[in-house]
Amino acid sequence: MSRASDIDKLCIHSITTKPWSLRNSVQKFQEAGVKGISVWQDAAEAIGIAEAGQLLASSELDVVSYVRGGFFAHTSETERLKAIDHNKQLIDEAATLGAPLLVLVCGGDPEQQLSVSRDQIQSGIEALIPHAQAQGVKLGIEPLHPMYADTRSAIVNMAQANTMAEAIRDEIVGVVIDVYHLWWDDQLEAEIKRCGKHENIFAFHTCDWLVPTTDMLNDRGLMGAGCIPTKQIRQWVEDAGFNGYIEVEIFSTAYWALDQDEFLKQIIEAYKTYA
Image (cartoon, rainbow, N blue to C red; front, side, top):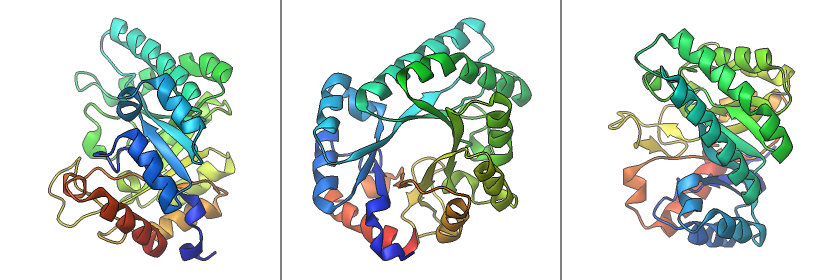
């Protein structure tokens, strides 16, 4: 498959072009020939979920996912129950937007062991399944880089995400693969194959790890600008049976400071060359 010819598989997260409103992103993505968008809650809330749903439904873009739910782990039972209720709301919002997937950043609590947080995460996801099924929204477990294990995610590699998805054993629960979080793992190829055998790959996110990285959250790079073997990991994912959108998700104060029209051109060129 020619990478340069498959822009039809390009999806861009609204957070990637954060300075633009959701309306601007939808318009600009369409004009550039981008086919998919993953919507972050802040972008949708800025114009109202119902209005955002109407905007997306009248556009030519496929809504690939809604970002982000999760944050199930807490020492407080009250907070855990609040998290479940909040995620049910997010599932409803995803359905309103026409998003088939809610991406889960699963959370953690530094006041308890990671194993306890993981148990709470699994219980939280299981509690959402009936509501998600009723709304037709899938749930994607996204493992994050270990540097975020304190509060953002106790799920820090593909093995943990696979084990949890397999334990839950429901077709609406799967895994989201993000190269930024997983590229360092020497078991990544094997775990992608494992995920593929269960048809559990729900989404694939790409960007790059800059060298040196100056901020652990907001200094991601365009594909080809850093040290992640983005093409190789994409090939592993596609060899495992995934044929969905390739989602560009970039947090970057440097890129957000650019003219976003120029940045969009750079995204497309980097996608064609390095994704």
